[in-house]
Image (cartoon, rainbow over all chains, first blue to last red; front, side):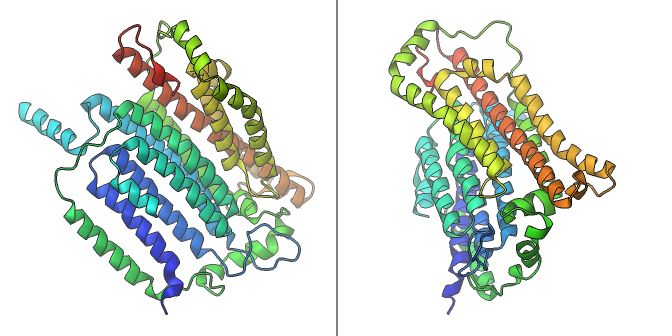
Length: 120
Length: 331
């Protein structure tokens, strides 16, 4: 009876995997990969909402009357490119953190911060 | 999904990055199945291409191994399970997959589908929504990309080097020998990739494609060249400051199309007044703004990659003693 909702469940499962990586892993690069998975799950959610049964891709053609909803496609296609731009920004931050702390593991960075605070 | 779980388990970040590339490609296929061809196009070029490259460039600088975990992440697992459970509970009264009478399909979508041919006059509805109905949103997105590019520049930019970094000719020649097949094959491929990018750029009205995808593909071709022939060779053709200037030019082109339509007595980004008939005006407007999007996306991606690569080289030149071969430079 609830089987028609499986598209949301796939998106949620992926989202939770991404979420798990973000909160459970200390490596900053891996966190960013997790964030990407999280992001993609949102994309999948939006795209699957726009699907119409027996619809076709939203490019007008003769003899086709049902189309998928084009609006989510527009939103997501720009979101993907924006996403990679922001991921690049995140990676740049990670690189700077590596240069400053010599590590990209969260707990080591925190340890160094505490040491600095005690010294000053 | 299996791949996503594998990503959780792996500690070797190189494998993680490879897997996330595969994940990107798979989700692109998934989008094709769901009729979202434009999105699939973007995801294939971004998810499987550029993001993998940037991640690779980053892990060469930050180290490949993830530290082993010291604590058992039961708390995290618990939080995730609870959140997931609540979200699934929340889906119980959502419309079924593919239902044509779902609320999303009742609002503006019918107008886009039925009237866009008369109002905008191009068959690809996604492009007409992107370029015409929601051009203001797209302008915002392009501005975000531009800003992110500036952010990366300000974080990674190196002080101008007075002397050339030590690039020894011997290593260079040796690399030529070693990767000959790869180099020759990609050298023949690159013009076609560039041509394809232009096709995607100007065919966006009729098929899947447009400025975003074309920009990414164009940048990917140049990045391929950079990886094989070195940063300096690539920067001789694509001067970094010129690329940065172009990023701004693209955004300005987009915005100035809007200003021109204001001057002609219409609203911002209302293309109907750009030519004698409103359909012609729409065509010109969409062509111009897609061009602006393409230029900005391509040059922001390029300058992001250039900066990553320059940073990496600087790091290697500092770390490695002289004479040692810098094999990872051309990766």
